[in-house]
Amino acid sequence: MNKTVLAALALVFPLLAKAELAVIFDGAGTCDGCAKTVAELLQKHRYDVRLVDEDQLGAEVLEDADLYVQPGGSDDIMDTLSELSAGQVQAIRDFVAQGGQYLGICAGGYLAGRYADENEGVPAFGLIELAEVDQEIPKDNAAQFISIQLPAGREQRDVYYQAGPHFGSRLPAGAEATAYYTKSRRIAARISSYGKGTVGLIGPHYEADSAWYAADGLPPDAKQHQDLLMAMLAQMNARHEP
Image (cartoon, rainbow, N blue to C red; front, top):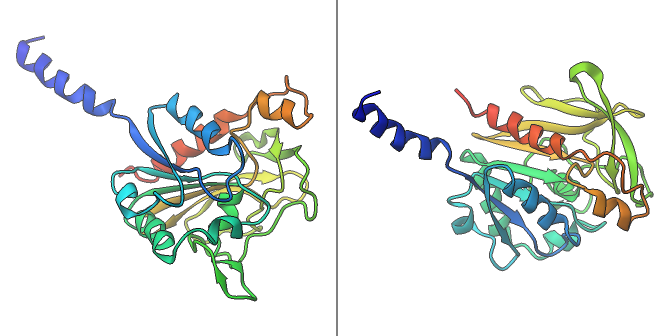
């Protein structure tokens, strides 16, 4: 191999290996450890990570980001919405519409709907077609394992769940379901488009690890499912490929 080719490869390979930037919300309404657990997982898989709160989130922060993550949170998404300005919410919408990726986990899935309360006219992020996003197991906020089914091969997994949402039973054109709740057959995880960008939503907590299990009295040696979160991101990335 001649020196010219080697020099060209030396320039190309660093570019191919360049880490993507994930901005993760770690502010009002997020649950203890939710943002940090996702951050640690993404850092193991080619992502640079920046944690931001409600005082830091804005268009400038998202300008260089590839992915914005809204992690799990409290039982009331107004704990987050009440601390974000209309401009900050619009910055999230603009980021996705211009080609960015949004990953919403549990509370981040609820926030993706058009309204936090449709009757009261309280807007949420408005990244998907659903007016409101509802809880899969109503009035049950206990941490537990829940069975989901993956479309490919119809594999079933028992994943960590705590008051997470479902995303109905139908999808808009161009969207895809990546998991269903086994019992109800409602959508547990999905990917759709918003403008030029991609919206990935997960009702359960794929990122949960053995420390979460132990803290909530679940078997700490039960299988972890972080591979599902990374597979979700890979599918989201694939939608951007020409």
